[in-house]
Amino acid sequence: MSQLIGLVPGPGRGFEIAQTVVQMTTSVALARGDVVQCTMDANGEYSTCTGAGAGSASFTAATYTDATLLLTKTGAFASLVPAPRFTPIAITGGSYVHATRTITKVGAFASYTLNTTDRFYCASGTGATVGASHVVATRVSDDAITLASPGLGAGADGVSDIAGTLTSVNNTTRLYITGGTAITVGVVAVVAKISDDAVAISADIGSGASDVAFTILDNQLMRGHFAVAKHDMAANAKGEFYLSGRVYAYTRNSADAAIGRGNLYFPTSAKDLDSGLAAGGLNAKFVAEAIDTAAVSTTATRALRLVNFNGLVDFGGTYAGVA
Amino acid sequence: MPNEIISTVSAVGDTFEASQTEVLLTAVATFSKGECVLCVLDSDGRYTTCVAPTAASLGTVASAICSNGTFGIILEDVIGTATVPATARVCVRGQVQAIVLSTSDASLVQDGHLVPNTSKQLEYDLTGLFNMKLVGQVTASVTGGGGATSTPTLRTVFFNGREGFGRFGGTAS
Image (cartoon, rainbow over the protein chains, first blue to last red):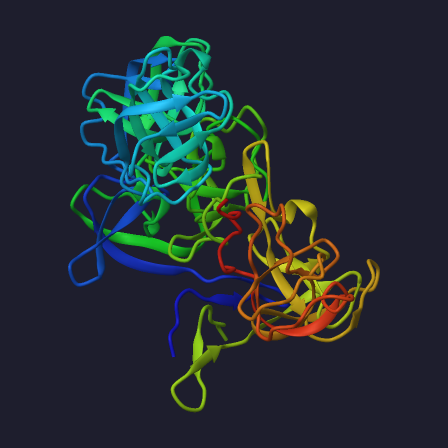
């Protein structure tokens, strides 16, 4: 019989989440209540841990180009390996008919299966609107696809020099846009990695700026196992961690919104639990629910608060978004 | 005695089945066998009472914040009031009889997933229910039409109101 994390009956009626305490060696210094990510070794065992999402990286002074939905920052995307739904299909010399918004290239789309979130990133073409905002509407044949309105534009009607890449929105590679002049803050997906210096993003975040700040979100935050430090500990020290139970952990709401009882938290790269989904985005793993509440405008700064935590099994799965 | 989660027990032969987790909760309303209830989280972090699921408890996202509850299935009829609370036997996990419907009267397919609704039922029709917590699985297929599945009916399901079976993320188009 297998047994993971238990529930225990409380005094009288009711029940609660049982505490599970394990020992691990931490690679970073920790304070009581810090949230860490358990590291699996070659034997499939978790004996060490790191700060949750330690691989996240933040940048400032990036340039956003509205017309092409490109985010540019020298060297920022060198380590980024997008994992699209299918191998991107690059074409050159494609023809375009604007009346039906059809791109034609013999044999180019033979292996393609339609998903209407897919995009055609138009790199160049006479009279064409370049950029990543061209949503694919239909797969006509092995040779042709159509784009959703407005397409590449009437100015490109009849041309035969369309170059670009058909790719999928990659929701597992995400950027958290944190600021910039007239920039919409929130999580966007990387549609295509253009180079080590530029990516095309999934949503329009403004009319163009050169002071954009962003963080490449660590995908491990969506799939790891997490724990809460039971006490302060130095780097490379062995200590005790809660895998589950009613515990005090560092929590916040990155939007400075109120925290209500039962609100779900996901782990962050700053060793916190955050209830603000704009910072976590799709597939954020819910590992805790709020017991302690906090008023609006008091939650942007991390604080120790009581939560029900379960870093292994989570609370109902990952965030699936809204209709 | 500690209960268990996601525990499995061996049945006859090479197979397994989910084990049962039952709890006692305070009921301040009347509930019938098979109704799905919300286990209310108190300020101590314990679940001590049960109520009809609220809209906010189902996984709805509001202002970029998500909540969802821990759910259970009433195992026998109970009559409670605010002044005279009763004790409800509630199944949090396991194979249990719950009130199931498909609003669209679609056929129930074995292993299909179910979400709770505010009418204390398990709903099979997931249209528009993004991010809702999946808490049940159909154990026997039922052909729809003519009200066969749109009528709320006690049916045997696999239930997990604590961890659930993931969330509904929509359909690929």
